[in-house]
Length: 78
Image (tube, rainbow, N blue to C red; front, side, top):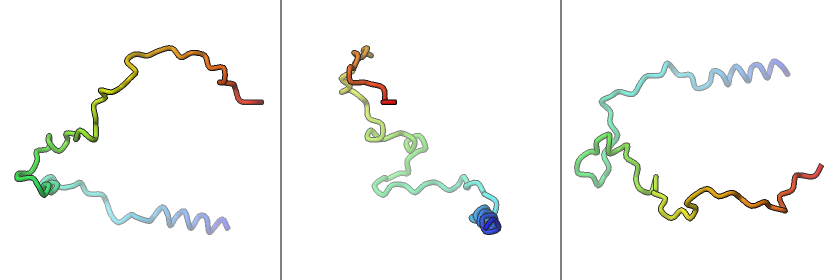
């Protein structure tokens, strides 16, 4: 049984090893979007879309307030 466990661990440790990792070449760039006339610059590619990072203008809580005591907030029994 122990031999099977050790063999399994050795096989799992060796899986996926095909060779040393190589860095991506610098001359490969991402494909340009289909509707773009010119490829976007790196700064344009790094800029987040408004849907990805929306501005919070509808936050009802303007400042931190102390919470009132909750009489139902009891410790767990025991």
